[in-house]
Image 1: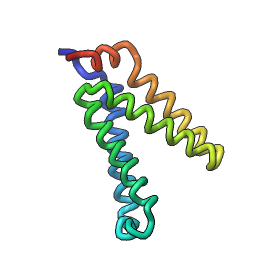
Image 2: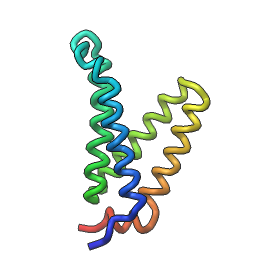
Image 3: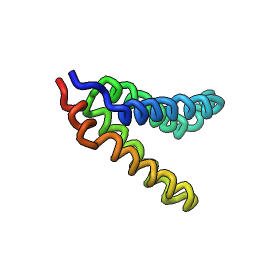
Image 4: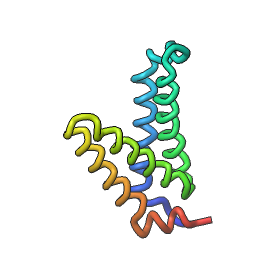
Length: 112
């Protein structure tokens, strides 16, 4: 059994934390979920970060692709925001790619 690389552990926990913090941050909006359908989307995106992080910790290959898709979505959304936000999300995307797709991470996610 391959030992989980530190980079996978750190990125996975970063996504779990981002999902939890996002849900807590938007918790006040949840009571408006029936009047504002976009709140459901916000909740879903935050839950995907948590799910991706948890399953990445367990070596699920699909989960690292989910985390990559999650951060790519944020880069795309950031195009419509400030340059600083776009830069931050782009740098984070590069870090995620390096952390989840280097040779030791590839071996970890390939294990049965």
